[in-house]
Length: 87
Image (cartoon, rainbow, N blue to C red; front, side, top):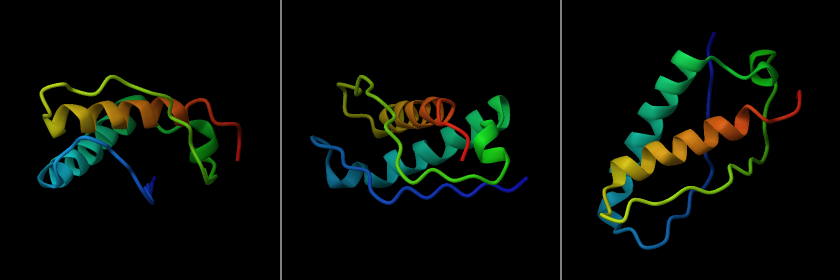
């Protein structure tokens, strides 16, 4: 199965521009891990799509390490996808 995830915009306040790549890489690698280990939510597995997702909130890493924050973002997204109605 092939899965394409496109995040149009992700706004993070309080992070340096230099952290962008680290956050993005962490989001991508954590999403790959979560989909590989936890599977694809049924609505998406049937070829559905999600136009907008409220992934809730998470605690940002106070040390400013983009990798930890990126992983938490991915976990919130993956969890939010699991609650989506059938598309």
